[in-house]
Image 1 (cartoon, rainbow, N blue to C red):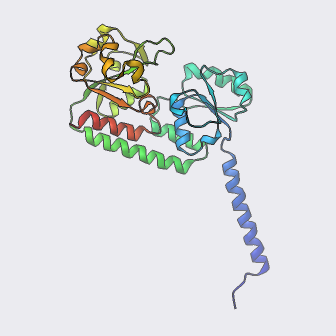
Image 2: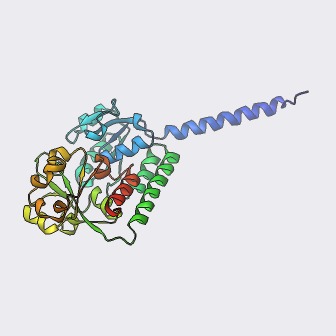
Image 3: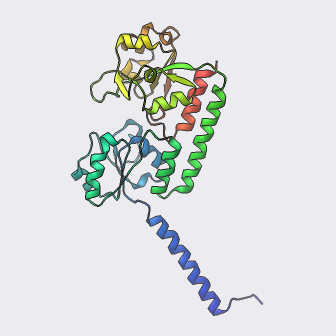
Length: 288
């Protein structure tokens, strides 16, 4: 005859199972369900964690043109009123100088806020965001992939001479249309250094993205130029960039036509794709 549990034991088992399910649901319910993210890099990480459906307000960025159709886009910093219209329960900033004022206003509206600075290592940003969206396991997996990519890049560049790299952007100066170079405190700076290169913009004292003079570009003497695939046409294309950017034609990079083109997110965010991007750049810089 099949064995059966006494009725009291069966009832206790059902109660314990119900309590476990309730605890699991409660844990997930603590995670933010409507998120406003002010940094495109954070948006990319949240998407990679499988929580993009929770995003209700994100920056307008070419990386996400065909993705996350339900999320509202903004071009300029949203006002407290436009933020409130999206009914977020969490607002995530990344740049204190630009975002702190809105975060302060959001707190007065009883919206939870967090500042996860974009200058933090990508693995740390992933860890923190994974906690806030309730995707800790997925966060660990993403961190592992990023660290593996970084390790491969370090192995590729070990013992190789460091290449002088200039990252050029058509959007770093906002809507001015001026060509800018990436300095310190940028995602490109971290990417270049990690791949075994030297960011000549930071070496020359540039902070974030700054406009460039012909004399400045020539004095930097980059051996390679790094651009995002999205911005390349605005910079003159693969052939025209050398004449489009003042002073660039007189550099070693132009003499050898050494142009490196990576995905927009890889160059600008150094976030979810940091491992693959670092490995790709290291291979391009150090593999004959």
